[in-house]
Amino acid sequence: MFGWIILGILVVLVVFVIGLYNRLVQLRNRVKNAFAQIDVQLTRRHDLIPNLVNAVKGYMEFEQDVLTRVTEARANAVAAGAQGTVTEQQVQAENVLSGALRSLFAVVENYPELKANENVLALQEQLTTTENQISFSRQHYNAMVNDYITTLQTIPSV
Image (cartoon, rainbow, N blue to C red):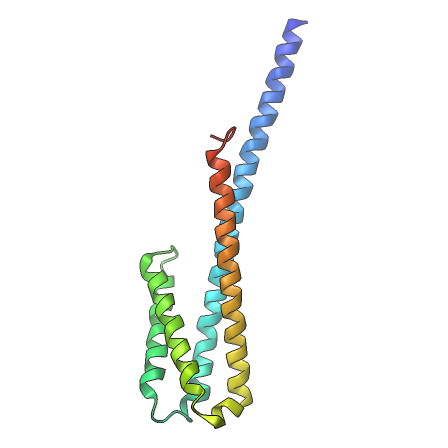
């Protein structure tokens, strides 16, 4: 009789440990997936930028430095992201790219013919939507990391 009780307790303990391990694996995979979503949105932004630069290039004869900054910032962001891991360099490159895009959008406001160009408007809208999705993806990633770390640091996971 006593052997069955110990066996039952061991089975419950093993099932509990397996469940806990599976929960940690799920959370780790959710963190990886959330980060991958950020990467997808950043890649989408990187892909849209050359189209926008080409669309405004003909109109902005006197603003070539702005276009050059956007192009260089995109190239730096793509190169920094190619490493496969998040580095301070990649974060900084993406921030520089965001600033360059803001400068470009501000300059576009000075050109009425650009503001009326449907292609430019569509690309601006796509980039704005992508920026919003990047922000949402970062929030989701931060929430997933928080859940994972909290689970790792609390009893019984510890």
